[in-house]
Length: 288
Ligand code: C2E
Ligand code: MG
Ligand code: MG
Ligand code: MG
Image 1 (spheres, rainbow, N blue to C red):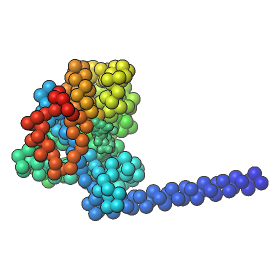
Image 2 (cartoon, protein in one colour; image 1 turned 30 degrees about the horizontal axis):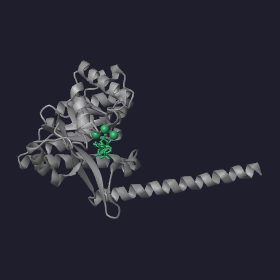
Image 3 (tube, rainbow, N blue to C red; image 1 turned 180 degrees about the vertical axis):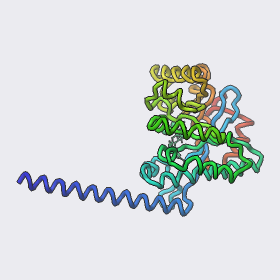
Image 4 (spheres, rainbow, N blue to C red; image 1 turned 180 degrees about the horizontal axis):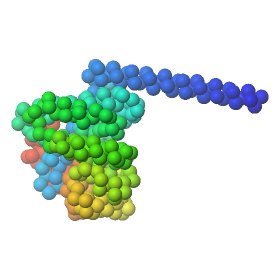
């Protein structure tokens, strides 16, 4: 009887697993189709300097304009492709689209640095650098120094030898790196020293509560000190209120990004936003 039950259980498990796999494969098929149908879009979120209020760049963030479900955030579909070749296909599309956008803005007289998020799988792909070079060659007017890649702290740590080699090769092409969601991985100081990145991006989980949680504030202070030691820039993400801006400024973190400045926006809205910001820069309601 017990044996029988065990068998049944494993049978049920097999079915559940089958269903999950089928579901996953269907999701992958649908995402591949979305890529073909041009249903993905990049939204852009500004980064500013608290000292001058100047815009220092924008981060490109992917969205899926789903025909039935509306605009979907990356958390709704990127995890499905994480270990699949589609992850790389999407990554290539993102870089190409960001370069095209950069070229369009350049043509209208606006030279604005763009940051692109790169997945761990894509970064470690054998052809990453050669494909990047090929894409950059297609946009000779774009200064590669205006392109930045954001890589997760956790992905940088997976294969430090390979990742730092790829980063160096990208650096040689002029592309810079920032370490995203910094503070959530477990980088040791030696690791940090070996990564040719220019910027640490303080994770928004620390920024969110820094006004009320002294531990989070202390972590941010620690990251700012660390950045000084290693001669890195530091930017805070998730800056939602003028109070966040004031505290960050007083701690010596000058670059910020967050809903308090602007939410990620459609490509068509960026230039209008820039003009408005230049006239009256303000964090949420109050001036910075
Ligand atoms: P991330 O790179 O850390 O991007 C910041 C995320 O925080 C974005 O979410 C942004 O919309 C959100 N955010 C910005 N300011 C605020 C704020 O003040 N408050 C709050 N609560 N949130 C804020 P989003 O666009 O949903 O992206 C989530 C993550 O998905 C990104 O985190 C990034 O890791 C990944 N991602 C986005 N686009 C791409 C892409 O093109 N390629 C890859 N590989 N990953 C991407
Ligand atoms: Mg990012
Ligand atoms: Mg982040
Ligand atoms: Mg994140």
